[in-house]
Amino acid sequence: MRDEPLREGIVHVLAEADMDVVGAAGDATTLLDQVRRHRPDVVVTDIQMPPDRTDDGLRAAQTIRAAQPDVGVLVLSQFLEDRYALDLVGDRADGVGYLLKDRVGDLPTFVDAVRRVARGGSWLDPLVVQRMVGRRRAPSPMDRLTGREREVLGLIAEGRSNQGIADALVVTPAAVERHISSIFSKLGLYPHRQAHRRVLAVLHYLDH
Image (cartoon, rainbow, N blue to C red; front, side, top):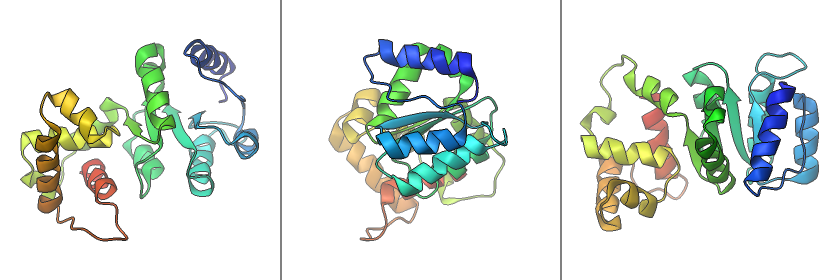
């Protein structure tokens, strides 16, 4: 992470949350080297890092996800750019997070995002999701979903399990399963051994 005070602050917050911080990097090249050496559960990185100070951190995160898919990646961004989130998610939503830097000051939210991504879940900043959902768009299969189905799909996009969704909505896991089955049907996502329908549904949600 290029911002040294922020980097030191994050290291302190994670240590206070009983997480072992195995390394810190000020540029993308060092970040990739440390990830290869330590194979951490999760990496927290800024989008903008040296050497180019453009999207080096994002490109490093994409490299990590491709080369070490078991390592979770949480990317911090100063700007509300939904295309960055889409580029980061790629074709799978597990073990990935996108968080606006302003949220880092909300320590419970930040720590929850890190833990969730480290466990293989996903965490997308609500403002980014809201922007994606609110964009003007042509009619799509997403328009066929009910309000409750959209809530369920939004929680799937946050990386929650069926039980986690049930707890959040105060319904039974069986009801969640029925909603998910209906979502798959309305989005035209049918069982296929080479396709992960949950991930494909999240991509529909993000693109919408």
